[in-house]
Image (cartoon, rainbow, N blue to C red):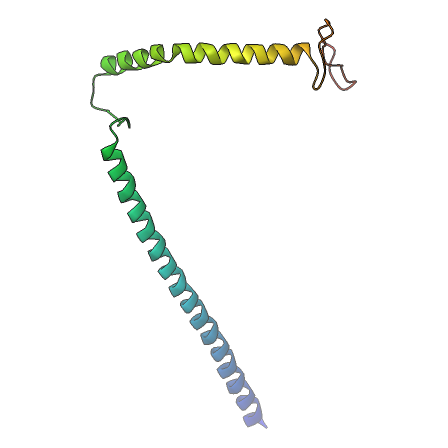
Length: 128
């Protein structure tokens, strides 16, 4: 009678070991596929980085970090660049003011009838 119990236990252990080994093998194959994919992505990334370095070397307008330069010199260059962009900044601010003026004057969509409209208050808003 005991030999039946031992046979069932051994067969169960062998089956469990087989299932575990099958799972480990399938996970190992999946891991290998992911490693191959990571290697190909790494190669593509390396090619793209080389291409970007080549483009950056050919294009002198790309600013490089100049951490060793004198801070006063860098500040002066920064101010000069900001001053050269001041007209564009002023034009953009004027466009924004005109747009905001239309939004305040007119409803979306609406037409100008000479009255400045304010949004209606809702009951959930605090009146203060």
